[in-house]
Image (tube, rainbow, N blue to C red; front, side):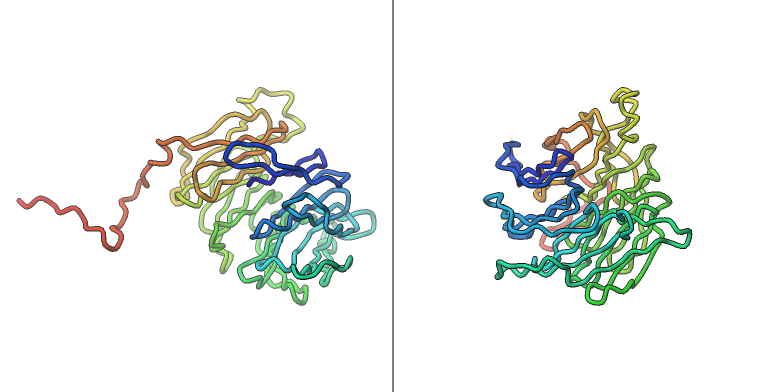
Length: 324
């Protein structure tokens, strides 16, 4: 299944094999900035500019509960175990930006309106408002990782709300963050024209993937040592350029060598989101042009060998070298 959200107020669910739309989640009155589905595909969370986060039944599209916020909700994320979730909301009028954590046990039907933990994000030293851009749970729900529009990454304790760690990851806004399946690595994509790979355990920076345009999303392939990057120039200046000049391709980089080795064209607006199918056979890209494109990798890509000679796996014998 493929879940999508956009500025048309209606999150959708599609079949990943053929792109058939299976249904929609109707009820929001603003742009949907983020969504997250639980591991069992039973409950879906959406974060919207209408200052609410909503929980839906994935199977029927029925709204289970709406969680009101004081500003536009920018991000939402299920914790591991799917019994609680976190949201981030933008500052609005006199309210600061906030991180909220809600308990939603799957064996209950009634949930409280108010969060169990609410973390206030005050203005910084220069009296500028800080806007959180993404929220994700670290492995075993030990901390909450939040990215910001000033390039910072912060870790928060989900029990007390205390700030645990802070690193300067980028020079400009961090647009998206995404983990590999094991949650050992994560990659950040930024408006400073780079994507960076970090160790999830100690937040150590490992690799940088440089481009010549803002990076809106980057994902780590599950089956190959590859990174997919998407982006392009700012949406507001798109109408003045052709698709080629705007640089709206998906770019493929080698994870280890940081080298670009391919691009996939198709969109005529900046790419906002990328997702690789866990089976490694296809990927989806969503762009400012209003389209989700479903790409299936060809045989030559799937058969492509890693440029490094691989060690023989246990049980496999190395080819015997001819004796002289």
